[in-house]
Image 1 (spheres, helix red, strand yellow):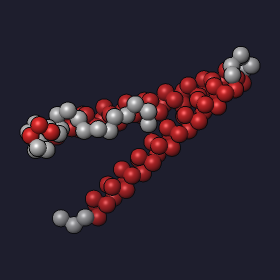
Image 2: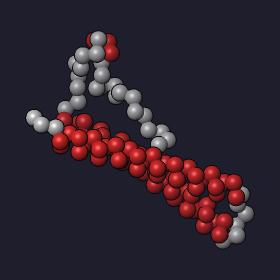
Image 3: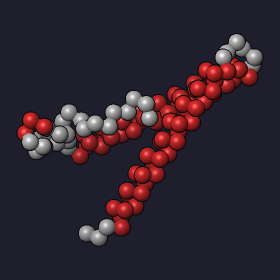
Image 4: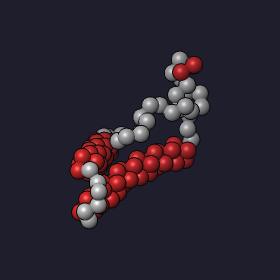
Length: 103
């Protein structure tokens, strides 16, 4: 997914204190942060799909649009959707694994 930064956040990891979390997120803040990253990622996938659909529609109407642009946009949309589905599958798999753990 283009534009998604998976590096540790500024407040979660404090490297100046040898990896000890001195200012961790509170549960509500972590939930809001995760939700906003997830929403931004899904919005970008939706945007790529919209661009692809728009270019395909213009080409179908006979407007002056380069076939290469349409194919590139279509492939970008396809790849972002595939990546999103793979991430979703990994998250579901991790959730199921946690549910199988005994406490």
